[in-house]
Image (cartoon, rainbow, N blue to C red; front, side, top):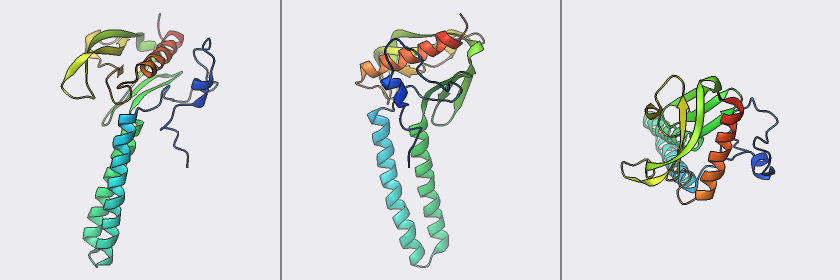
Length: 185
């Protein structure tokens, strides 16, 4: 079963360098980069844990306690939903706007509210933890909010781009190209 949210479109990787937006259907939401190994690894471990919890639910159900098995089954479903939401997190673009999908919240900004999308050098959080290191961040400048009120879209030290500087550069360039194409100038 293909999981379209897990991988970026192959058209972006196969496109020539002179084509900034290689997609024909630009109204479809897409993530112009692949999820990083940290994000995929943690999700895989959570899915492995969920398989053990599901097995435990079956064993509990076979011993006769259906209500307890239902609780354990619900816990397994919550772990699976969390792993899938973690894989879906990131920046998505379409002709309608830019969508920043987090673990608990999703923010969508139409392109007419976007002034610019730019890459800057600044202290960034390491894997989302309180510790900060010097790195690059992709910032969204909006018409309706001050520049410092919006958190960075991507950083060189988040779960998708830690130790993958070239992947960050490609993703930032792609998102900046979408911003130049559809955003305000």
